[in-house]
Length: 600
Image 1 (cartoon, helix red, strand yellow):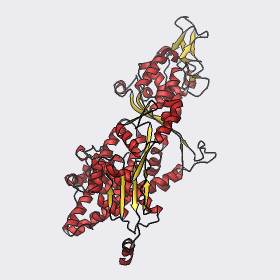
Image 2 (cartoon, helix red, strand yellow):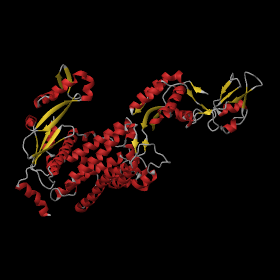
Image 3 (cartoon, one colour):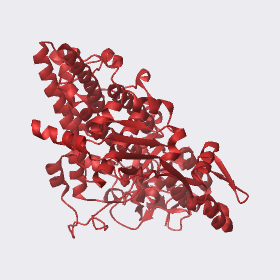
Image 4 (cartoon, rainbow, N blue to C red):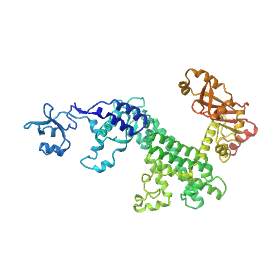
């Protein structure tokens, strides 16, 4: 057998791997590193007929060996024109011996292991060093490559070994590693077993974008396994694409209505978007800019597994919250006369701005659907007229003029519209509304029937969040929960409504405290509400001679404790918020609940 002397360069290979950025990091830092540090010499020869012949000519006792470096050198050494490098064309070629005149060297029988060829890909594809030398050197090492987890002992390994041996460098700067897609039953996909749906049929049924988003929003992009379920592809259509399309269609319908009622043409105006005073406009605009900033940062770090959940969450925020909270406003039903049209225009400007940005951002992930939305949205841009007579294919690229969303660069975020306070307040609103609905369900109170009051107890809310909830966002909470009153309980009154309890974070503290764990746990759980509040304010707790960090070592939770059967409460999953409803059903409440049905 013929070998590459990997053991001689093993330390260099390990060092080059440390220069390479892996996603996820543990694949390169643990799995691949451990494989490299114990690497042995690599057997690169195979005893087969089909394959790339080893370019080695030798005499019978191996005392004279010639490794041929090019077709030109082979022609020079053999005196024969070479047009085909397959075995049947070169096995008969002989090289006269320089050490022993009159004798000849013949090619060895072996062919290359095909993984040697895979590892040679960066050079072979450019026909380096015989051609494209400058082009190759400009693009080496590669900016990034992507392959499956199983390639840690395959392609990733051969690339790294050969590049280190030849150039002393890694073959790539960045590596994205994907996991394996398995059948729904957890077994390998098998043509014989037919344990997976036909991909062509899945694409025809749900669209290529749905399949793509299902895969890139799955554990596969974290180098983990995915049990493929066709229902998951359907879920993308129902939970992401249809709501996104409905928001887009709702926008177009109301632009048409607005233009008809005002006899004016809708023209996108980003300055108008920046000037809005509506709290939900400010929020969705800020959230969009945060999303753009996040996508830039995460894609630069090759973290696809963080980008897709953020995009899916944002589409949900846009459709389930912004559009729903502003439905009447966008329809021109808020205010009277010109005021309603002005409010509608402002909302439509904001919605257009968000839809356009989302279409561009989603371009790489859902290329067909993003293109569909863009082709409709671009027509509203003044620059659309520049697309005539081939102008849409020329520089500079810009929304409206450019013929495809895929011509456009990812938008840069607008720092002037970032507003963390607005985003944080809206997140609090959403939690309160969802908890309030859960409390209604517990008492089987329909949303048609009003409740007297909604009370929110928030652990350590910022001043801006409280101002937002009790100020500009209050009307949305009252509307969403059909309530007459909304109150955020001040910190100094919270002890009348809730009890704060602390429990040890056992997975963390178990290792830290050992035998003290039981005594510490007992002491922590005996703390009163006031003592627990003081601990959180100080950020630490000393008990049984052990200092505990309240942020990492303890878990805090609020529990509703106010007396009275009229109260129904729901805590948040993290125990940081409690929402309570006054469910008193007196004559005024019952009458108010009946009124809408009577009017209808």
